[in-house]
Length: 234
Image 1: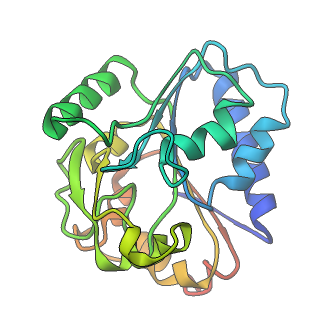
Image 2: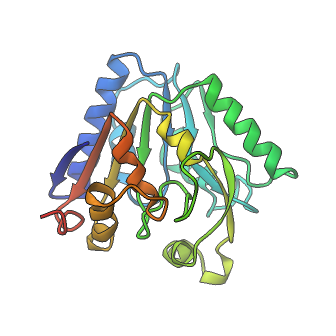
């Protein structure tokens, strides 16, 4: 695991973008993308670049159950606003949180990932160590699945809604095995509230109680964090 400590989120986004450019130059065709505040500077770098994504496929980590693509809180809407409206891809995919058969939707997503193996995966990390929406206790072997969101995750995401009661209680998420299948993983984290999770991910026991700790078993992970998130690493 390569660790880079940056001064600002903007510096982190620029570094992640440089890694992306290198991956594209080396033939990457499928990107695994994430939402939330963590990758915003990274997406800004992409928007302002001259990189061509017209032959690229993107596959997003997750989506809330019960929110359609037009909902401003949905991850599909987020990706359209932050990236897809500015940089057209050959194809972009976000889990269908409105599917009438959620279990079949997860199987369809697994087939999609099998058909388009992820070359470059962007991740954030939750305060409880979750990656994607894979909460503590999620089996490392699981692929795309329907998740009951942890109370701390609901609380953390409440800032995007009028109040916490409006935050969906379930999501469809790529599983840990799905994430680990990516050829390269770039995880970004900023702020002291992530410091404990970062420490456990890097130096803790590999355990399903800290989903991100599984990244110790991946042979191509880059960690981009600011000084606050790194404060417990020593």
